[in-house]
Length: 182
Image (cartoon, rainbow, N blue to C red; front, side, top):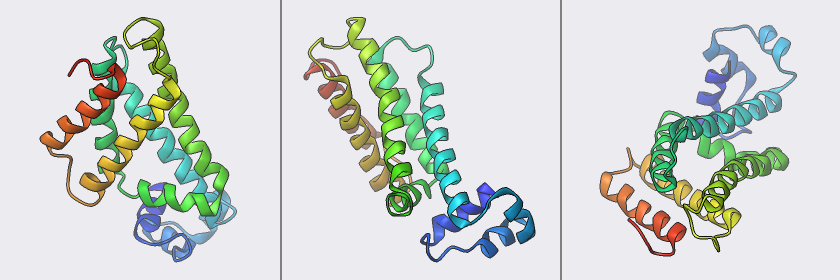
């Protein structure tokens, strides 16, 4: 049912989506829906949480065991762009969550940033990034790069071209290293 809900909420606004359309696409009876979810809002919020978790897991898997933080950034950005390519509805869902349930919207970014911050702080502590770098500020700046590059070239286009990816990486690396490195 979550896959069907992702399609329906991705195509329509939250207000225009319906339980009947979700169940029709999922191939289940409406009664089956209500044994799992009390209402449309519940499946919407579960979907937002699941996509947010999936995004974090995809990027975490991509950088697992990578000691070089700059290589981890490249791998993490690639994984993020790949994830949003497979789940293009995530942009609409996250943005609508701000109005449907602001706390879920906020938690999406807080959880994403916290994992990012921990990884950056570990690299700072290990001497792999400059000691004066604020890991939380860096996490939000890097998330902004990923979010807007993904929106422009994945959501509104087809994929992130290599030259665009390299330009984004120059900004990311420059921000992390104070302009040192490539």
